[in-house]
Every structure is written in structure tokens, then in C-alpha cells.
Length: 363
Ligand SMILES: Cc1ncc(COP(=O)(O)O)c(C=O)c1O
Image (cartoon, rainbow, N blue to C red; front, side, top):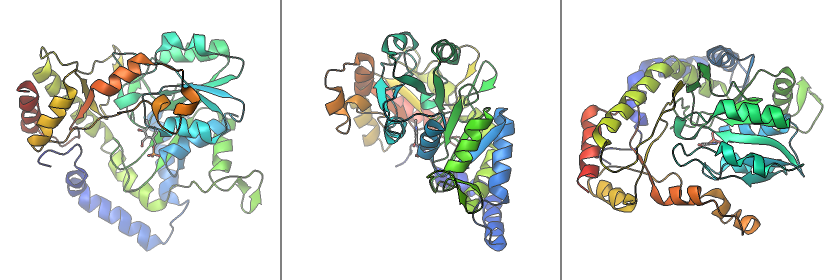
């Protein structure tokens, strides 16, 4: 592609000498698991997010799964969530034996519709798993208030929102647990799978520490059946280098979004909006239009990438649809027909953005 969705090679070339030397020093140390980089990354990110605990794990999916388990979610429980997200959000709920209860989304933000949550609460509801989709913080004031009033746990899926903030506080630091993915294309991306849970709750942190390392609370002492979900030293060393630049990278994404917004304003295409007092980090720049398929094709013909996140809401996916036959979530279903994510990464140039917008405006 002339203009790709993300350019990981460009970012690697920019940081090559630092990353290569960090990786080489892990190889030289021969300390590959639970070493100094994992520990340092945890304390750097805990400080950045202003939380008391950060537990590095093997992926964002594991972060969600272990956070739900540590919050005591299990068979017979219900967890309210959004149908308009990557499957991992719901998958993690299903792993615990609990049932995902899908609520429709807000048209303007693509995030869970706060106004529809209360009607879905039953005696089995134990938690809300909210996603800050595309890097835009969900309505955390309303979510924390709802959870407090109904005695529910709040799990924040921050896979797409590293560095995003709401009223001056980082996403992930509001709920009982915040779950990050460091999948390579994420705003903070490793060179393989990686993730992290953050929390201010000592007991939840301790449970996740035990669960992520074979249920072990001391060497070769196992108190529960756990998992092998440790982040490795090489990934942690790479993430520590990239973490130094995360604000710069997120600001570049925001600047790119500003340029897209300038060019696409008044075009009849719905562009992402921002809430007052919150910082959107544009993991994706997602437009919506009735002419989505024509725009997608025109971009492809111009050798420009674009992607549909997400083409099928989760309640209609074949893995779930038999359980949600009668469920209609019109806003999410319509979004799936209209959304299109445009190229977005820190090194995207103004000239490239203009090229993308020229094609869209001429379609
Ligand atoms: C919203 C969301 N949740 C969860 C995940 C899962 O993260 P991972 O791929 O690191 O397991 C992802 C990304 O892949 C995601 O976008």
C-alpha cells in the first residue's frame, strides 16, 4: 500500500538503535522471564497512570480475563458490555463462565450507551466491562457512579486508549481494573503479544499476580490453578523504549486527527468528536458515511489502506448469535454498516493525510 493503516517499520527505523541495544542487553543478561525490565516497566506505567499497581501480562486478552477473575466474576454472573468492540472484550467474559450482556452504543462516540445500562441490570449482574473504543474515553463519571450505586465492578478495556485521559486522569485508573493491550499496532505496541492490568486495589493486584504466574504466591507454592501469562523481558525492554515517546506519539496522532478534521469538515461525512475535558488518543480515526463502501473502494483503487472496525457486532457473530437471537442493537448494527477507519499513526505526514482526504472528497 502506498499509504498503509500503520507503519511499524517506519517507527522501528526511528528508534532502531535504542531498541536494538535494549534487546541485545536482555540477550546478554540471559534473564528472560520476570526480570528487571518487566519490573521497571510496571513501575513506570503505574506512575504514569497514577495507580498503585501495574501487573504486566502476556496480552490484552489475558489482562481482561485475569482482571475479571480477580474481581470474582464466574459462572452464573452477568457482565454488561458493548457489542461494538474487538471480540476479546466479550471472549474474556465468556472464559470466566459469565454471560456477556450486550448494550447498544452511542452513535456519536461508538462507546457503550450509559442511558441503557440500568435497564439491563439483573440480580446476576456483577460488573460492567467498558471499552474506550478507538482511543476515546467512555463516560467515566457516569460509569463509576452507576457501578457505585449498583455495587458493580468496573473493568476498563483500555486496549485502544493508552495515554487517553478523562478529567485529567488516565483511562484505566477509574475502574476496579484497567486492562491494556500492547499488541504491535496499538498506541504503545510491543514486538509480539503483551498486556498489562492496572489497579488501585491491593487485593485485586495480588490475585492477578498469583493468577498470571501459575497460581503461585511464593516460589513453588501454588494456592490456586493459575495461568502462564507473564510478559517476557524482551517485550518489556522494547516497551520501555517506546514508552519514553508515548506522549509525543499520541500528540502526533492528535495532530493528524486535527488535519483530517479540517479537511473533512462540511463534507457530509461524520468525523470523530471529542468530549470536553478528555483526551482522545486516536488509536483509530474512524469516519462514518452511507457511502462507506464506495469510499473504501476508491481508497483501495488509489492504493490507500482503510479498514472496517468492526463489520459485525458481537451479538451477531456466529460464535454468539444463537444466544442472542432476539437481540436488536440498532445503533451498533448501523455503525457496522457505516464505519471506516483511515490510516493513522504518528509518522503519517500532512501530505499523506491530504492525499487520503482528496480521494474521499472526490468520491
Ligand atoms: C478493544 C480491545 N480489547 C482487547 C484486545 C485484546 O488485546 P490483545 O490482542 O493484546 O490480546 C484488543 C486488541 O487486540 C482490543 O482492541
